[in-house]
Image (cartoon, rainbow, N blue to C red):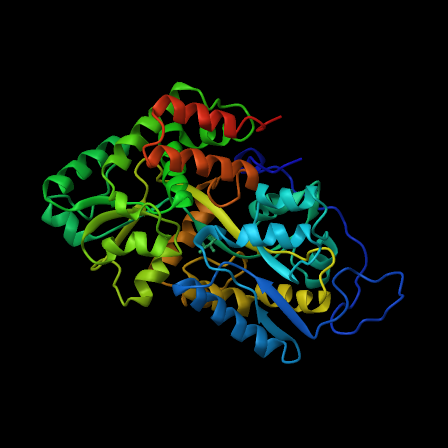
Length: 437
Ligand code: BGC
């Protein structure tokens, strides 16, 4: 039932189940109508739960909210954002609110396996009919629609796509250590050799922050060492977590972690990346929301920072997408419809992604519209169109929330020095025990 192997379904026909009706939706609550859609009703406001609460992420949400308010002057936007990158705090609050039957009107959720948590718990509405109403089925690429579909139905609307396997580097720190900033290392071993040089030059080779950022680093090393196909096999049981391939990646991870500044391992992604921005450290692996942080600090690509796919993952796009839902029992379903309409519109997607560092989920941008994006983002759009797509573990695309949380716990215990490599691998096996069953 879960969509955990995007690669396997690429190219597969994606005939969508025809969905019912063409209802008008929107602002009026017509009461007893039999044909009333779940997204019809009170549109006086919309409470939007995200974790875009600080820094460049907050600016992205503000840009989106501005389009929303222009498009929906009668619907009040209520910001229910909770701080904490990767949803580290927001997801807990959301789970409690959903369990207590007091959901926000819409919430941010990752496309892919993470959605199935909410679907299995019967907490979100099927939005397939809304896709028909808004004409969205052709707006998004087939690969993304496949990732969003569960049992042929669509339960959320994507606002944007991010890439997770990107290294952000400070070229001055690299050059001072005799590392060529223009030619990225070809694999993890070559990258480690560069880190040795940077350490010898007296700078921090790489930084990492709190648990989910450590998981993101680990997943990119798994992709590099296993290759896309075997990496995808981790999510349907075809690749074993106790295999030698995984062991090799864990050894690489251990080595790379030995180069990090341990004082940062409880920090959120922005403070953990800051030493790279400030020229105190060389590398940071982070999703491409990082580009927005460099931009807001007026740093120039090519001069103040460079970026490249994690060595060994060139040609692979480690995918995640933010999307929005209609929770069952939402108080303002008409407001939710208005929000979903804005975030899926070209104006909403362009306004958000140009500020947020992501790329629009829509595949129908004109060249002129693409021209509004930074060089990095135009690059990412091209990669998304041609690279092999794999799903992010740290950002809900590959595995359900409970499994990702257990992986985060195993990874952070290891990074904090609380387990050795064997115990770490066993903890990962235990965390993923339910996978593929
Ligand atoms: C979200 C991004 C966000 C990042 C850091 C990811 O899980 O998909 O939108 O920028 O976390 O908070």
